Length: 106
Image 1 (tube, helix red, strand yellow):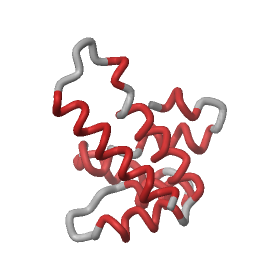
Image 2 (cartoon, rainbow, N blue to C red; image 1 turned 60 degrees about the vertical axis):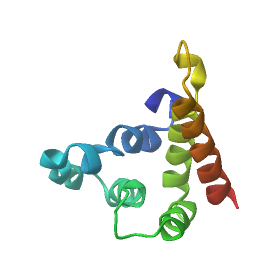
Image 3 (cartoon, rainbow, N blue to C red; image 1 turned 90 degrees about the vertical axis):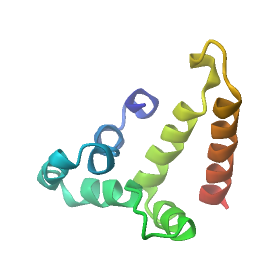
Image 4 (cartoon, rainbow, N blue to C red; image 1 turned 180 degrees about the vertical axis):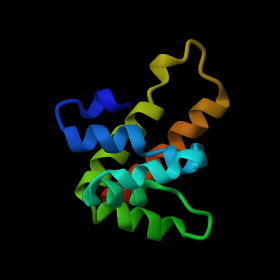
């Protein structure tokens, strides 16, 4: 996914870090070593169960760096060409990401 924001060092850093807090909590503190604007974008992208979706998307919309990375992430996750035989679930996921894109750009 970082390749989708190639050439923007800040966006590349956020792209590499954006799932660390959610998927690798043992390494979440490592994000603290990065500059504030990187940490802030990563925090915006970190999905929390106690945060309503509209609040989550509003925070991303308000942070241009987070928005750039999230849109690249959605594009990557929605790319069915990487799946030889997309399933109904894959198509459902693409629709979910389409709705997220609308929420982000609305």
